[in-house]
Image (tube, rainbow, N blue to C red; front, side, top):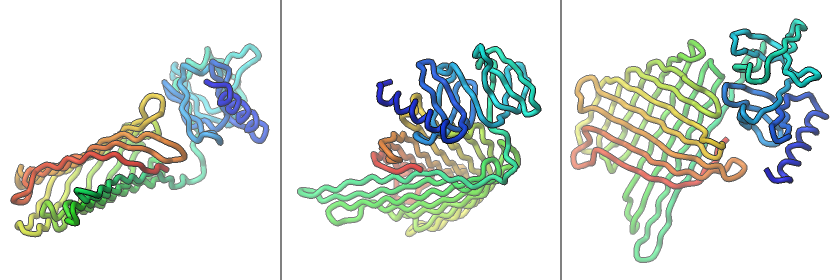
Length: 341
């Protein structure tokens, strides 16, 4: 680490401690990071800082850790305590429990996990999301313009309920002739019956005249399981029943009940310099194996500065029984810029 960033971290940490109590992580290189400890797992500590937002510190880089507020601390020997973490005169970690016991432990490696004690205040809604823009403008021998806009937003009360919204617009012109026009809009509501299990109801709408789709509407409901849900890794699977109503421009309209499934995967890559994402949806009609639709979005977002990101994305849209004179599969590759919040 360069001298200037190191000095900034140290001074910011000291200032934070002077103004108010704070949790503090001590790194092997001597740096001290002050903020609010959000979570500790087997591999990392996540802290909220005033100067850098949420940051992840590898457990292997830690030589000291202290907190100024009670946490739920679980040890590898399956003992659990509520209290603050500090150290004695010899530097050995000590848990100061809420009933004033002092529990000495054999190093930070004895801690399996730490997390804030559940607040008595009702949980608040939080939201996150991103919007991405890509396009092309070419004039001369060929006049071409392309515009793609997509957004993914999540509003949730952690482990209680969650609303997910997705939208996409894609339009292309070549020599003043419309060559592509797609609109997609989707929404889903999840209600958690358990920390991991949730039920959902969702709807999706699509319009694509170049695939003869005047309007496709899908309503679905089912259950899912949230394997992981943190800024480092979000992974869930879901499945249920659906009803699909497709109005074609030329072809005969189609309606059927079906089975649907979904995968949501978002993961920070090593070094927190990029985020990988994959969202997959499938819908199989119960009346015929030909009524199968699969949609998938896979890509990487790389932070630039102040919420701005660069992105690379591949979209797959496959319909086993498309309208007459249209292709079963659409592939879309996008490079764009966006904003994350």
